[in-house]
Amino acid sequence: NAGVTQTPKFRVLKTGQSMTLLCAQDMNHEYMYWYRQDPGMGLRLIHYSVGEGTTAKGEVPDGYNVSRLKKQNFLLGLESAAPSQTSVYFCASSYRRKTGANVLTFGAGSRLTVL
Amino acid sequence: DAKTTQPPSMDCAEGRAANLPCNHSTISGNEYVYWYRQIHSQGPQYIIHGLKNNETNEMASLIITEDRKSSTLILPHATLRDTAVYYCAPSGNTGKLIFGQGTTLQVKP
Image 1 (tube, each protein chain N blue to C red):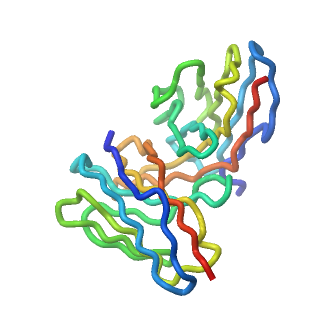
Image 2: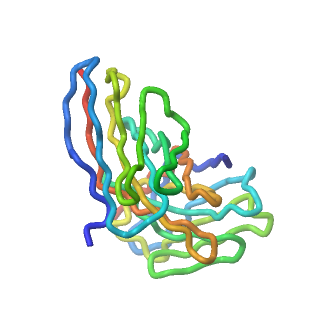
């Protein structure tokens, strides 16, 4: 049981390049989320998904696209990377309990640098 | 989405109780209050959550005011390993958490 796995852990890009971050969870969770965290700042929600085939925008969606083709995977894409997207990216997943509560499990993070 | 206000930093002596406050005056009726912490640059770790009643688990206690506009996380016997950034965040049906700046707790020997 690996929990939430993010790939890659580190990546350096040049401005204008594209890349995809992969988040995989083996807990059969319905909900998945992508956050970014800049130095000294709190986490900000980029996009999230409440089920396979569905996605929604978070606080800072511009410059990112996402896909949830399989329940266990949530992909975050950068079509044309910019230095402002240099950040640590965290993925999380959760399920809604019978009580209505929704506890997130986070991955270890992916550190992206855009030169 | 409900906004939160937390003090930027707090100190606590090792072995003493750490009381971390959070203001969430715009919380909706169906939103739980969640607390997470982040140690160094690791992924946030879940601590506790509550709706109306006070809650306790093996990690901490959560006190929620009757009007639900604020809450306090209590670490009963803080250790050096509890040094971290603590976040409170109300959240509803989608589970999405909107984090604020959090409180940096420094536990000192």
